[in-house]
Length: 237
Image: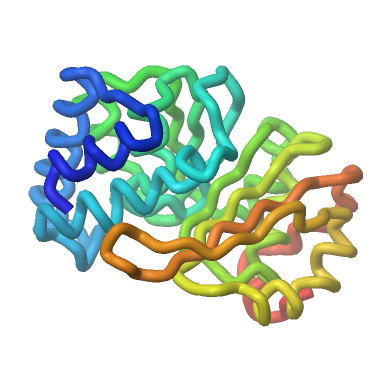
């Protein structure tokens, strides 16, 4: 997908990027490739692949109608090189975006990236989701949590649901159909008082299959969740 094809796809969804927004995506690509030589951010570095498999793929919550340009608080868990939240932020600048990542070098890259792209209303924190999920400054503070290819839903639910306000939503982006994964996550979602409100498969313009699943928090998360760092992955609910 060339940048021009990227813009055309957005136009087909009634999204027109300004010259400034286009420049932000161009600078994002350049910095991603530059920093990838220093720290391992992504295996995808060809320009057309970055625009398709990172930028376009990241904005699925917009294209599927789950987000709008409102000043809501969005948390991205394990964003790596900023996906999906920063491409979303470029298109919807009114969003207040927070990223938590366990690798400090990635946080350093994201901090520089946000400065270079002149992004305001973005916040970066180094650490584990399990620890931040028990911190009152973060717990139950976000309207939306996004996660792209972070963990299977059985684990992901425990890492993300505690951050959500009541009726807040987790938007999980997956590389493939999630039916079996969601079935395995039933117990976890029940314990966390969360419900799947939508799950749909779709295709990227090149035909690659993807899944987006939306989970809504129905009641306050029990205080014992999330458990200590590493436990959710070793002993899923």
